[in-house]
Image (cartoon, rainbow, N blue to C red):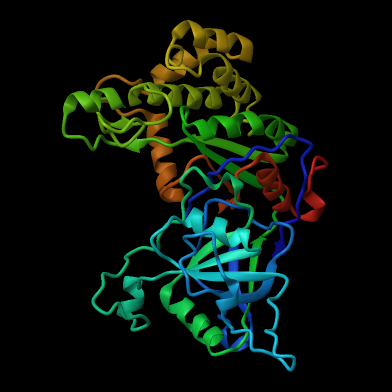
Length: 418
């Protein structure tokens, strides 16, 4: 294992507040002092899907616990733990110049907490959960005292405002956090290390999960195209489009609008009062565009793992057809084909041979992507990127993803572009 080295791209960076949400994690949270609190595999935790991941170096600092939910910006670190006991001159011992802040989960958003921690100079924020995990309660590690326990760890997702957050954050279980709090409140110091690690390999596979109409997805695709083409076939790429299997709505007319193939394949959780995304279009339009992109990849990217024509199509489509009036306009799509070097007849053949989108018929390509979703786990935030099956954490920028890809190569296999 090695820490991910930072690679700076000569590209403009964009603030995108969406990150992978998959079962695997590449970060480790560990107590380095006192060693009595250290765990063999580190502390179980949930990473935020906003803010950066420190791919260059681990973060290791003294922990300061503030008995607060950090919901308001007027934060007084003077009341934090361990207490700053006055010295010989009767002045309180100063706070460390760099520190990891621990605060309680509460009534405000995770973004609000992290933003306020950032304002007071914290290098990272650990949010101490205020509810027991049901599994911890069964094991006798935590007592809910009559309150309802949590079956799953809360997801630290982005509410769309996380673009200005530049420190990492994570959620720690109630019983784990209590042991650290007790040590700090008793006047002892605790040091934590947060590290992002990878296992380098000779070949790197990276997967991109998007939807055709998600604004954040379109921004990332536009920014990452040149990076993907610069990597050429040194790294094997595969794009996926998230498709939901089966209509959840009871009204058939709604299912027909939001899904295809008699309700088999849906672009969103079908609901007539919840628009799928930024474009006010029915979900079946997005399923159609998703299948079209799958066919383009099958014809032009599956063999080389690069898919230049696929990238050309996607960015040209965003430029020419990404609007309510043109998203499903056949003339606009044909024009995009011409500008992208895509043979319309090949794509039409693929669309038909895969099973099409009409009738209660299985579509082989849509079935494949649904099976792939099951193998990777549930996607909570899109777009998302996996490199060698591990999530890319922090801000989903071209720079961050490129750094993660390059750092997964063994030193003697790293391509020149890295």
